[in-house]
Length: 450
Ligand code: GDP
Image (tube, rainbow, N blue to C red; front, side):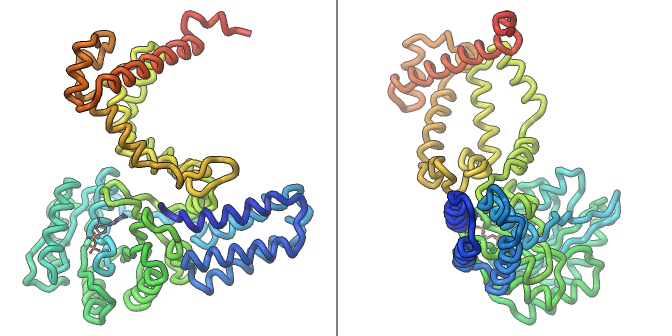
């Protein structure tokens, strides 16, 4: 889980601070020493940690905190603000040229960093914005790389320009620009060769493309799980070819978070997007403030809302609201809801964005102790039962007599008692909705008037 261990450690430090009524200078210093350890263990760059702790300390032992009624809270606030600053303060948007003008993006990165996957994710984002991207296969050293780009392009419904492996990358890129102009593509994303390690030939090739084609953005993908290595790679690429920004992949599996916290400070270049999973929809815009909130266990409700807005069909949501009010919610709607939740990445990903979702906050159950697989499996079981019903049965659960239930249980490969349980639970939910909608303005409105 992203940032899990760092988040947990920091929250423990803050819990102790909050527990104290007044804070002495020594209390603050002790707490910051623990923050420092936590950041170092999270593989944050040493110099970055030092500067960060100094800035926090300067503010935290000042008047602002010492005279505050809730000094512990004030320290957390300062850490939060400094953390946002560390990651770049503002979100950096990738500027795209208007209309039919072509924006050219060169993607680079070491092999395995997630470059090809990220290109497909980005293409999907641009397409959703109404742009017409063209992907260009310039990694001529691995035939598999061309194929992979083509497969990913197909998945996203985005064209791929390839000339096999016998042409120089710079020539492929030039030909691709002509192709884009002819075919009305207004974003060109060039996939370049990835190597296992940084090597001069790779850099020279990138420089050659950059010198011969007008590139608007040079974006580097780095793997968050490699921690300080990712930061070093970013620093080298920036020195040698000059990058516009970074996409940090695999943050979903990075429990430490060192790269996310160091890259901006070390390279001076912003993180543009973060990869949060293998699915082609798992790319999020990077917001320093939201990231700091996630790390400090304050949740990231804004990203959650973005996700809901991006995935939920508004007409469907309205229809659902109407059905709930009229108590017409049936098993078909239930299935729809499950699909929506899956599109958003499942229960665990959603819960992680809620306050306290990552580490253990206060008296809340520690989320890492929850068996998410068990929860997802239970949902899958319910889903199998509903899928074994006919459409008519899903619409009208009253039809479910014992022989139908037996058929459904056999179809879903479960015991009939499971089917009974699901149907009963559903009936209760519906009853509750009915009462609730009554309160909201049905016939019983008068009853609830004060
Ligand atoms: P490339 O060699 O840089 O082009 O890397 P690929 O795009 O082939 O990705 C390497 C592996 O990382 C693949 O298995 C991807 O599915 C995986 N991957 C890429 N981005 C992410 C991410 O954000 N999260 C996770 N968990 N896996 C990712």
